[in-house]
Length: 224
Image (tube, rainbow, N blue to C red):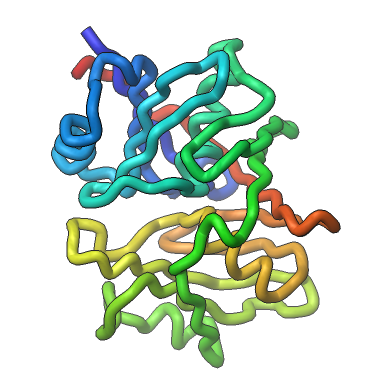
């Protein structure tokens, strides 16, 4: 029997909202890309993670339609889960490269590079109301991260994310990889409020890496 942990990542204060994530702790129970892709499609989460080696931090990430070399909310959530189980390595190792992780009070953090999130295009809008009024998804193709300043002085951003891959995810509730790209473009720490009530924090560093952090909640554990 294989356990599936269902988390919500980048929750708002008090554990509200957040993006659903499936984590298969024993990745070896679902061998091969085709079987993993099929399970991710069946589950229907924005991403599903297969933990291949908890001690070494080796993980494999899938959306309902594609395998990802890097993604933010799956790594934040998986890091939190492994830490909760007393198994947290110093880094996670998705195919893109080594991703350091740490826990800081109620926040779980990863540290990564914006180039690992290439292909996620940002578009600034004139107001929060314009972002809120967008349909899901807007017309067009390609990954869109729509954003506006909520309070530019304080670094507060309102954002919505639209993968536009043609799969079941019309809008992504909270997206660490896109937050990474936006932070790199703006060159400053951000407090992003995304989706219906999720919160993502970011911090750029001098070595061109960026930390992305947020709250994580365990929703349920079920048997596959």
